[in-house]
Image (cartoon, helix red, strand yellow):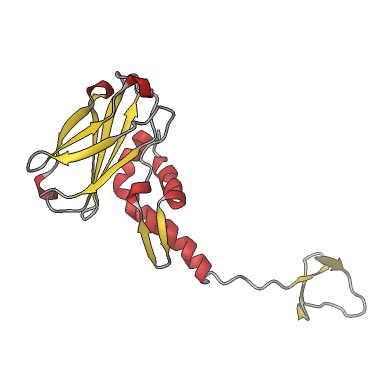
Length: 208
């Protein structure tokens, strides 16, 4: 930007070639390069805005869980940021969320080497995990489970379902979740509830 007082041209303003001039209150003219505002509706900008909005909508049903697993009312922001990096696929406007890569919790505690789910009743599932201490698991750590109904966007957090050393736990799910697309995760917390493990996706399943 250039500033000048012109006795030759007098007061000048407006566009001059690739520059634009204007008169300040002190009588000084300013001359600066004309910059055309960027188009907020380019495909790239729509894509970026669309990504954020899509992930927020998809994860809003888990907002209360994230206040627990990501320690505070802004946990949803952290979860959205991670999901955009690890679980989001597709391009505008056809975004999808890969739930198998969605991070529900994060921490330094060891994960389990193996975890599986099977239906053992009309709406009851059994989750089994590897509880060997030699693999770094503390048998006194607490097991927590998360279940998501993708159809209704409803979520259930089962806290303190068992101690890690138990190796398995059974959980009753709502009867109206039958034949719906469901997702499940497991994570561990320390006995005092301060430390967390990074969540592990168990599987996608349906109740029949």
